[in-house]
Length: 628
Image (tube, rainbow, N blue to C red):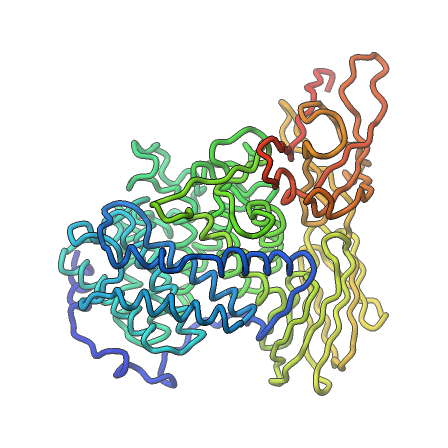
């Protein structure tokens, strides 16, 4: 209680405004620096380039921004989350602008920010809640997204009006909590995780202004996490995310729910920002332990999880039909959390996780033309459109999807203090800064993951000695790698191949990954099988040839679990990749059945049509055999 009273005293101390705060050269430096820095500019081609362009045109630019701003003028909300949509859209749009900085989008961003700032009250509030309901339900959550959007805009524009507006929003929040003498973890839903995820922009504000009140507030939020009313995100980091609060709440979506997946990961994103600022290792350890728990107990074959928006130990249950499975908000936030950890540590396991999610769960939730996103994406059944929320013409997942999609361009190839790091393989051009401050262009030529062949050309003004790290996916057990035709040895799956040499312009790195089909087995009563090729999960689709969808079939694999896949044509019927595999169908004859050819497609394309009769299936249930 003494600490809380001290905190109230701190937030009430008057402070000068942004113009009188720390000058740029006096801003606090992070105690912990990121291992990797984003590329300077990127151009992507091929399938991923097409998906980015589709979302850019049909979702980002197509959004009615005035409709997103309107609730902030009315301020008549009492319980819903209208105020998140502006922040989600603009953070997506700014990622899209960083990728493709076109004047048309910049003008839209300018108008969106100016429109939002014009709604700010004299006391600093930007939100849509009535005076009586401020701080309740989703109010602080919405303020978080406003601050994130304003700060992201400041980063690309250096418009101090945006920074000032974000600071005033934070100052008013701190004052309200102080005046009302309430804990932030007792406001909103999900054991305070929704409200206290404001930790992320508060940390960013400290980094942008040097105002220590924000750092103190950030530490106070984390202190409150560990109270009886809080989510205990640090002390329970050793506990499985689905079992931290085992008593089922009376209101599944209410204040007692401590397993809410999206909000939990949002809090951990903020905790990583606080770790950068303070260097307190317990913060990083808590995130890493929680990541391990999520990955080992929740993340399924296509790289996502959660049911009815909460962690539930779903990895071992993924073969059954699950209610409201894989919320796209969870999918996008899992990618973002992994991006944070990849940027911070440079470890391959985070890039492996991103790739699994991106090519499967994320692209599978995106409508083929980029205009819409599914709210939930099952592993069997149908791709169904989600419902509108809060009378806003979209829902939370339509707003979240592009936030995951546009993380990829600037993190596919990144730079570090000692060289460059290739995290992902996408046809395109990547401009970065070398350790010697040269601008280098790295050109990837590949149709990956259709094939496993990747060619990387280095273009730089003058030779430079540095390291090039190239990720070897964990699943690629047979990989070849060479520089200018000379083989590179000591290649380890699940690690980065490290090549240190003097690089000359026109040097070429060539790599071929192991694209054999892999048969995945899970369970025993019944056993289920699925096929994965490279990072891509394959699925049956009612549009493709083969036995009926409900028929029992067993793919034929060798002793090591690899399966022969034959290309069956690409880009047909709205399908990206198709492969035929020999499977043994169920038989009622004593001698059994002969193998038949069954066509599978990539999970992202499976059922991804406008036809609600289009069924798909990832897991193939097997007959129970008592002889085994």
